[in-house]
Length: 459
Ligand code: SAH
Ligand code: SF4
Ligand code: F3S
Image (cartoon, rainbow, N blue to C red; front, side, top):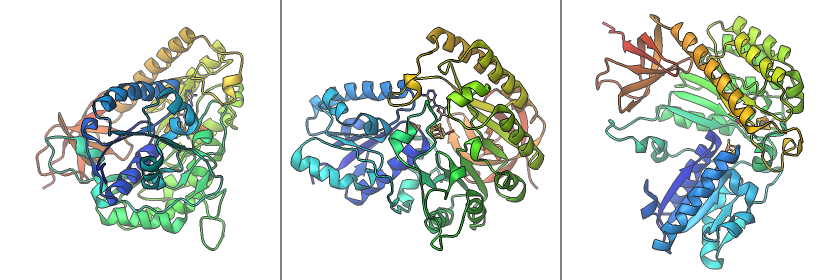
């Protein structure tokens, strides 16, 4: 085979990170080698995201740039995978004729076959979406576990200690702004035994922290049979089963739609010992009128009731959220309602975005679009206030002793994470600590986005 060096650039969410790992694993098992430098690659893969216009523009400009690289090295093959590939399909090759292969989100498992066809037939677009299919079982290979960390230099061989495990794919919610149901297809859940098998394999390799991953994990098992017996089995059941796998020290999950958040699941924060006291619960907006237009299917008071319950079951829980500002029809009073919600919940952190029109979504056809300047001003206000609150929240940890899992050696020393998911920079580190170690840390400094502390001497 001529091509044997590949390069993958991943955009977007952890779904794409995981898909890139699977592609890397498939290629490695067919004799390819991964490079961190696209110039030496025979095969360049862009695993793309189309959640907002900006994410898609990044991909298009990188593709434009790759045209030159291919001119210098005509044997280079360019493959576009992921959500932009799924959405744009043949249009991508029309605009960018130097692209050789466009594969949709369900096609990554057959990458090698598609590449062989490109060799024989020339450029190819494969983006079919099946409503009901099996997610192939791809046990992570140990050689792939360190992939992401490979880019870190000057570090003592990083040990991957924290991994994402996909439990479901796709989404059936059709929030009116969101492209995911179109790019990932219908929601399907992986089988319980396959998930457990993957978690066990990871734990045996020394992975201590598992994050269960899906677009809406709370509806796990609702759309297909996940247990051979066909008995009713919920996400809470899965969480408990995973929590009992030997070696899983910390357990997290993401993402949850508040409409599907059950009392059972909330109680897990009290009852499941290794479930971390941290929860990402995207609210999107603080106005019922806007939530309705977004098709979120919950009200602000229902959301707040759940927040209260979560605090009741787990007083130290750290909540984070996602917010969209400037959704079509958002008036000043709607936005003020989002600011009020922020004051009520005082999230530890949030990801906030200006509404971005995505073709094919229902909201893209709404006529009452908000002016770009107004969106920018609202985002600025929201983020400023969130930064202040994050700092106040982080200061609550000053002087406290927190358990920190060491993650990696960065440029400025050792870095770890609390169970509440706060990043902690460690001052007095020595080379004796390795990723995965859990240490007691006294928090000495609190910034907006991270904490700083010293490892307590344990005699
Ligand atoms: N499944 C997750 C969301 C995945 S997308 C959930 O339901 O929470 C991550 C975030 O991107 C969303 O929570 C939303 O805040 C943001 N987002 C999605 N579509 C967007 C759009 N068209 N414009 C701006 N932000 C968007
Ligand atoms: Fe998108 Fe809504 Fe599905 Fe999340 S739940 S992926 S925001 S459609
Ligand atoms: Fe982006 Fe697709 Fe993930 S649109 S956020 S890569 S599901």
